[in-house]
Picture (cartoon, rainbow, N blue to C red):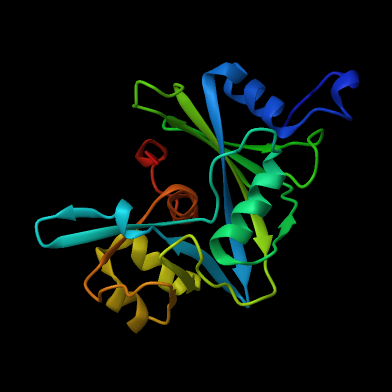
Length: 225
């Protein structure tokens, strides 16, 4: 496990975005910042399902992304403020953000594990580097994903539904073409804001996809989030 050696003058004030610049060898002007959450509630993982305007339609097949709570950093926000705001907006819950002793840095080419001793706490579980294809955006997005806990029942607000599942059910999202009906039949709970058709396919993306791929030790070069 590697440790980041920072100058003495940086040790009190250095934030997680500055650390990401050093780890990824990027300038701040090169990337946008987004956030994600790996939330636990009553021993279940909590993820959200995209709204219909983001579903992919291929013939008669409809597919919705399943992601961690989170979103883009707004002007003037800190990363932690963004995480808390997104949790309230998406599932109407306050979140306790947990500190991670280990941080995984994930790109399309490698996964590295660090102990960020000098970073402000709580520290993220993942720092994910995404390449951006759109010409009118910055070249990269850096996603800071944290572990967190909620203590109230999550309810979908800015998302179509909330998925509550244990690892035994989540693993199907990684290994099989999986529908809403299939997940419900395999012990997952889906709290719907809008009705989800039984034959809607669910596709893990972002923080959830990274979690599944690292948990089940997929090939590093397979991580194209």
